[in-house]
Amino acid sequence: MSIDGRIGLKNGKSQWITDIYSRSMVHSIRAEFDAIIVGGNTLRKDNPLLTSRSRKSPEPLRVVFTRTLNLPLERNLWNCDVAKTLIVYVESSANEKNLDKIPRCIELAKIPSDNPQLLSKLLGERGFNKILWECGPDLATSAIKNGCIQETITFIAPKILGGVNSMTPFADFHFEDMDEVKILSKSTIQLLDKDICIKNIL
Ligand SMILES: NC(=O)c1ccc[n+]([C@@H]2O[C@H](COP(=O)([O-])OP(=O)(O)OC[C@H]3O[C@@H](n4cnc5c(N)ncnc54)[C@H](OP(=O)(O)O)[C@@H]3O)[C@@H](O)[C@H]2O)c1
Image 1 (tube, rainbow, N blue to C red):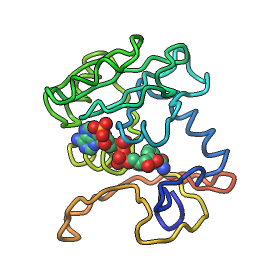
Image 2 (image 1 turned 135 degrees about the horizontal axis):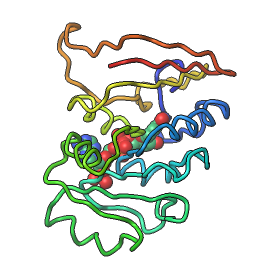
Image 3 (image 1 turned 45 degrees about the vertical axis):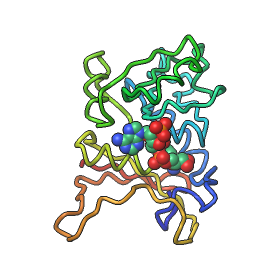
């Protein structure tokens, strides 16, 4: 994010806020994980590759969490030669018509509700225990609210994006009092080339 806490402009443009050194560090961080989760909206908007750029073999499992299954026909994540992709969707008669559009090499799993805890449990049962949630504000907030996150990694770039409607890393937690806000501990601060990386325990 930028120094004023923005992860994108009002029009959705966000490439790039952090510099090449930070982005390369993200590839190395991905290599420490068994699986990486994004939500359907990040898949639609960013078309990420979500790999460690060969720092880990095999690459971490790429996971798309979706309620709607409204996913584009062509996405980098559909290239199964690079890494495996799993789509986890919420069971509903409304979205099942979209199943036909998913490429055959992609594995599918359904869960009964959109509670992120069910996704963590499903991945744990399959042996994926160290999970990186690399998602946007809505899913990140939902994952934190449901106790799925133990550690945060924040990259801050010395840029000002400004604007009241720019994207921020989290959606509304509906806190009413400062006693309710999330408090992070054990800050580890690393000065990078231009950016700063802060790791915290939640
Ligand atoms: N700067 C960064 O590091 C960074 C990282 C990631 C994303 N982003 C930005 O974040 C924006 C997208 O934000 P987003 O919040 O919509 O992210 P997201 O990662 O797409 O998560 C939201 C999507 O997750 C799915 N979902 C399933 N269960 C959910 C639940 N319980 N709560 C919330 N979502 C659930 C839904 O997909 P369906 O709609 O398919 O049902 C929903 O639209 C993009 O513009 C992207 O550029 C930035």
